Length: 137
Image 1 (cartoon, rainbow, N blue to C red):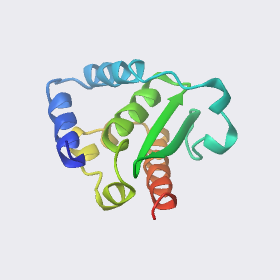
Image 2 (cartoon, one colour):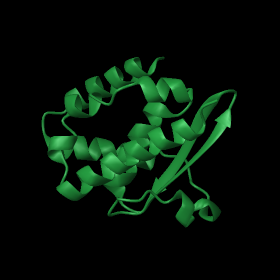
Image 3 (spheres, one colour):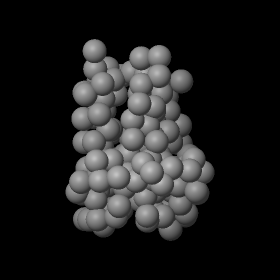
Image 4 (tube, rainbow, N blue to C red):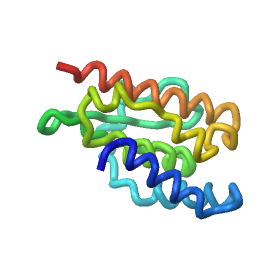
């Protein structure tokens, strides 16, 4: 499945819910499904700067593709990073860097987040792209 196909799948998943409270619940469920993040990786160098909540993001290469793992101490933020990982993990740096994030607007996520969470989302996206850039050949 391409990044675009995964993004489209998320847009469809979110479109099943009419109310934003239900969409937040869906985000929370995504966060609950996030694999455990080792405590020893919850270090300052993995902390995403610019998030009000604490969000840790780790990246490693596997066969030319970046594999992301993450965690957050806030349930909605954990859902947001889980959603982003579902889109970008297992992709080449080039795929990540050439993709757009318009699906976030199509879901309505940016317009329904508080300003501090919007800043956090922007920081998460920037960090994912920065990590992709640093893992480029």
